[in-house]
Image (cartoon, helix red, strand yellow):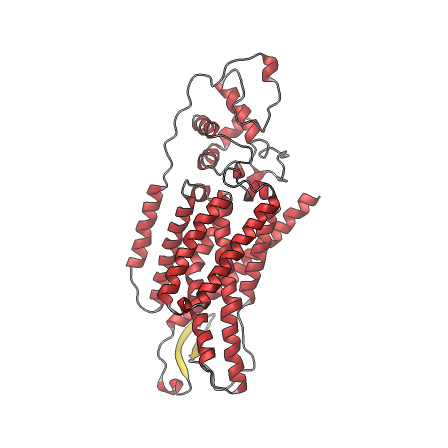
Amino acid sequence: MGAYLLDWVALFFRWFHVIAGIAWIGASFYFVWLDLSLRKPPQWKADKGISGDLWAVHGGGFYEIAKYKLEPEQMPKTLHWFKWEAYTTWLTGMAMLSIVYYANATGYLIDPSKVAFGSSVGAISASLLFLFGSYFIYEVIVRSHWGKNVFIFSTTIFILMIIASWGSYQLFSDRASFIHVGALLGTIMAGNVFFGIMPAQRALVECVRKGEKPGKEVADLALMAKNRSLMNNYFTLPLIFTMISNHYPMMYSHDHGWLVLVYVGIITAIVRHYFNQKHLGNTQSKYLWIPAGLTVLLIFWMRPAPIEPLPATPVAAAVEPAEQAAPVDSSTTALPVTASADDAIMAVVQAKCSTCHMAQPTQEGFNALPAGIIIVTPEDMKAHKAKIITAVQTGYMPLANITALTDEERQQLVAYASGL
């Protein structure tokens, strides 16, 4: 019952996270479009302090939108704030990180071949230190004099994210590495709202309520908020990519997965820049052709190596039937001694794959059959051939190599599945 209820909790927070994320990023996209689409207003509006306006039609009616340089003529009775979309997305995201990666750290967070944390507590502590330590560095940068220069600020943060991408791959499992970079992007974006954008807006509103002219302090807060908002704008597409990345092991399980992530971040940021320019009325097709070309190069660079056929000779010597019937020790990494290549491969499958992929998984930390895929017999392997080849070849399975599948066994499984 506990595992069943945990699945419901995970479902709720995942669903809530997606809904909140749509609301946040949707509002972000809208306000970026809105701000960049404003045009010089007529003089009578400019005399009232309006810096830009636009007209739109939607839902069967016309909308007239205006933005003031700083303060309106009088404070409106109802003022809408946009903050809880960001906060809710971050909180539900941290809940998902805890449910999926912390509650089952040995299956999803830890890769023993990288860092031997010794315990789940050590790995979780490293995860939290990675997220909040990186965010602290970001906050120091954005509050420094570097944060006032858009070019220097953006370049510094780009370098920081490259280091963070590389660092995550040294600490965590491949899948967890992508998610941690995404969680860092989300933390920075939510932090920008909480520590930068909202304080600037509150200071401006307070000045208007008091009937005071915003001074240098408020102007400095507004400048910092603008740079933070710019960073959030360019982080949106890379963040969305990391959110869906766990469905594509070919990306994060690549030998240079951290570099793949950096590469995709560059591609998506350029695409975001294209739309920013388009909203300004400055459509430059090169900002679409460049990422398209980079994507083709990425596909070519990441192409998998050709599959070597399985040797026709048996992989191990024959033994007595009584020895063949002996139970398989799932902790061993060597191929068991069997009478044929087929038997040897299936023994590996039963020891290293079936512990999770059976009707009732016996592997610790797995409460339900992953993706509904059963892999117990050669017929099962044939039915899921394409998925098995991709998952094993990319290193996606076993998750965090929890059953210690060796490179030799991995090659043999891929070759065997290819021949089915």
